[in-house]
Image (cartoon, rainbow, N blue to C red):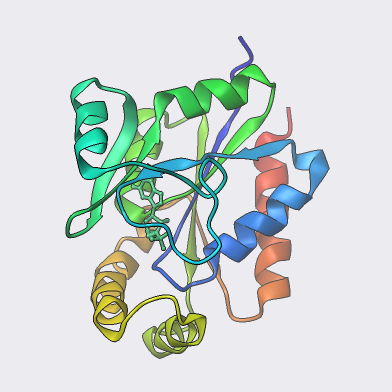
Length: 190
Ligand code: 5GP
């Protein structure tokens, strides 16, 4: 079976990693496919089952943990589980593509430690915690409580940035996208 690369993008919530990952997925020559995670959190806005996430009940999520179906999983926020299914990586490799992940810092480091040579781990840095707050408020998808929870986690996550292969600062989106593209291209080159 084709064994592609694992490209992990991690960042505090609101740092812009999802936008950067979407941009990379549009660059066909990179041959990337998005790893759709499983989560026990409720569906948000226009999210689509099987495209943005596999939405599971907490019970179903826990039984997948029991069954050792996950490559990695985390309780990212209290009672909100997120994880990468082994079957997702197998599905993507089966079609001959590299896997790109948009996952939290702990999950990203987990994958890097498990497959050190096959994995490129990239940390997207927000310009500042204040900038994060503004982005999360603008997004209007979470309550103030949830925003505060994400901000307090962000400070902790920022302290782990140095453990990643590469840090990209997202001050000007186009520049961050260009840097991300070049970094991924260099990594997947045979
Ligand atoms: P959101 O609720 O905003 O979609 O995601 C919250 C956080 O969970 C984000 O940092 C996102 O990257 C992370 N996340 C999404 N999927 C996974 C996963 O499969 N594993 C881990 N560890 N984190 C994930």
